[in-house]
Image (cartoon, rainbow, N blue to C red; front, side, top):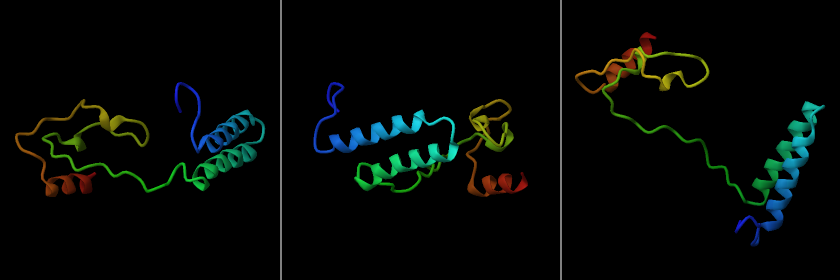
Length: 105
């Protein structure tokens, strides 16, 4: 995309995808048809090799002195990003401590 215009070899595929997304967004009455329309749009990205699914990212290991197991928990949302109730330890949490805290919960 250059200056708001789609150019290059993949321009047709990108325009087809964008049109498919607009059509899928317009479907509001039939959830199954809407799902199928979005799935077909995604398939067009994959079939034209504009997107190559590689896998899911895995969080990096983080050495910390925070005991995250003391913090808030919710089954959904970002409660694990809140630091309320978490103490700063005088040492880094070892893998054994991490596993013990995880298993205790």
